[in-house]
Every structure is written in structure tokens, then in C-alpha cells.
Length: 108
Image (tube, rainbow, N blue to C red; front, side, top):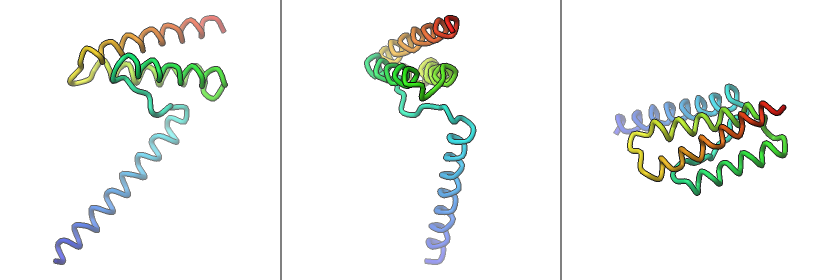
């Protein structure tokens, strides 16, 4: 009985510590990081790219933040352990978007 109580207390403390660690990592180290971007298939990738385009257009994020977010998602798709055909198609969508960002940066 005491073992179960101690186990639950230790688990709770570790979980709370991990939660705080994740919160600090996202908010302080990458303030411009956009969450919720997807690479599961080409359609979801296009929706995510449109979200980034809208955020750039409304000046909520910079081009550098969008580029960083796109690179992260592109490399997640490229290095996916069980990459399917749809993930490879999504990868192409992200590559095109990164080229678009490079052209926007050159035009500024």
C-alpha cells in the first residue's frame, strides 16, 4: 500500500517537472515557433502552409520564424522512421514553400 502511494507521488512529481520543462522550451527558446503544423499528407501540408502564409501576411510572425518552422517540419517528414508515399508528397509541399520563402527574403 505504501509502495503504491509513493509510486504515485513520484510519478506525479516527475510528470509535473516534464510539463514545466516542455513549456519553458517552447515559450522561451523558440518564441516564434508555430505549433500544429502537419506533414501527414499533401492536403494537410497545404493547410499548414496556408496557416504560415496568413501569419506572415498579418505580420504575426517574421519570415525567419516561418522558415524555421518549415525547416523543422520538412526534416521531420524527411527523417520519419516509417515514411509513407503520402509523407513523401507532403515533403515536396514543404520544399516548395521553403523556396517561396527564399524568394520573399531576396525581394525584401
